[in-house]
Each structure stands twice: as C-alpha cells, then as structure tokens.
Length: 280
Image 1 (cartoon, one colour):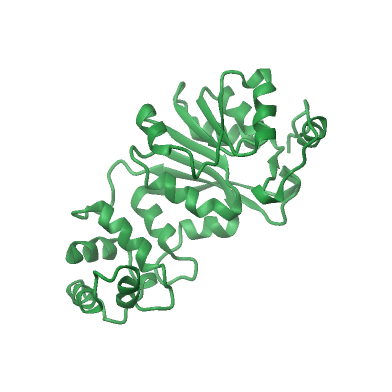
Image 2 (cartoon, one colour):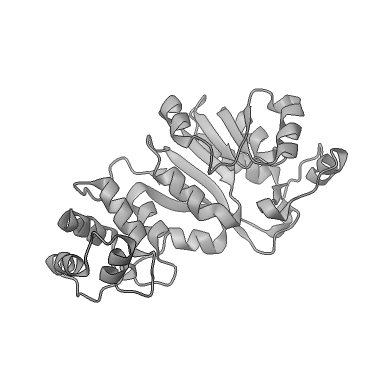
C-alpha cells in the first residue's frame, strides 16, 4: 500500500484544529495507489471529462482525479475540510463546493456537463440515497465509481429472492452494469473503519435492458415495492399510494403471470417493467 508521503490526513487535521467527525462518517483515504486506480477507472482516458467527487475529505482522491485529467467539481459538507482543500495549491484547478451532496443541485450540474462521471468515498449512512440520486439523475452519469461498505456492494448485484435484493439492486440493473474494482482494507484509511470497503464501478448501459412505456413510473413502482418488505406487493403499493388499490395490483400481477401474494423481492427487472406497463 502506498501511503501519501506528503502530509498525512491526521497532521492536516491537527494543523487546522480539526478531527475526523463520526457525524459525517469520515474515514480519509491514505492509499495513493488505490486513489490512482479509482481515478483512472472514473476518467477512463477521457481527458477533460467533468467529474463530480463526493466527499473529497483531505484530497487524496481529488489529487488523483486531477492527475487523471478530470475537470473536477468536489462537493464537501465539512467547512473545515473545504478550507483545507482550497488551501492546497495542487488542487487549485478543482472547484471546491461546500455543500451537502443530498442538497446539491445535481440536475443543474448534470445539465451543464451533459457527459459526466461521479466518484467518491460514500459515507455509509447515506450511501443508498446518494446512489439513488445519481442513478435517477438526468442526464445520467456515464459511470459511477464509489467506495462503499462491502455489504452495500453485495446489494448492487443481488438477484431476486436473495436477502440482499432490494430497490437499489433493481435500479442499478436498469441503469448500469456493476463490477468490483478492488477491495480496501481498514488500513487504507484514517481513521480506520471497522470493515473492508469495496470500490464498485457502475457503467451506464448504452441501451437500457428493458423499455417500459413510462420509465419514471417504473422507478416509482420499484421504490414503492420495497417500502414494506414484509407485505405483499399489492398491500405495499396500496399503503404507499391509495390510488393504486389492491385489486388493481393483483390483476396486473396476474397479467404478468405472478400470484396475488407476490412480494417485491420475487420480481426481476423485466417483471417490474411489465408490471408498470400493466398498472399505467
């Protein structure tokens, strides 16, 4: 593992009277070799590609992304860390934005960039909403490269009927091809997390694998189907949206060859596309 030989994050934090904040799930990347691999996977040789970095921290990955040729916007919620990033001369070509990524105007960024990628060390407690925001944004990112906890990575590629399968699994299958780039041990970060991290690459499909009449309606259906995992799909949809009565859902399920007691975790992406068409 190549640890950054310039300034360790702990020293940077100490010099500025700061500390890693559990509130934000902060574990700063130390491994510069891993940072370079992540950056290269994100930019993929496309010099000048607009890249949105989420949670740059003390800037290890930020520097690697710039070195790989990204036109970089880095969104950091922590004011102290944003100040550190702005002070670093080697990061002067990056736009540092102090904001919560879930409050950031992602669609405006995507609209300006058109062709873009996203990258970051995602805090565990908001990994899922961040990924949903990226996957449902228009224009879509050409790829997402994210450091996430291993259990979340398993959800991205889970199939119907498995315990890990959920709304995120289905939306990822619709939007992108998921693969694993590398595993990072706790020693690759400061402070050390308690679990391994997995770097995943979500490469946007050139063409979606299914073609529902109303893609937005299908995405809403997927979210609703897993909102109440212990309930049948018909009951879950009625609870989420009273305008979709149970009888209507059971009729739609019958039309795609599914029993009335089917649950969301038993349906594939193709099933959801056909069900959405029968409900709309």
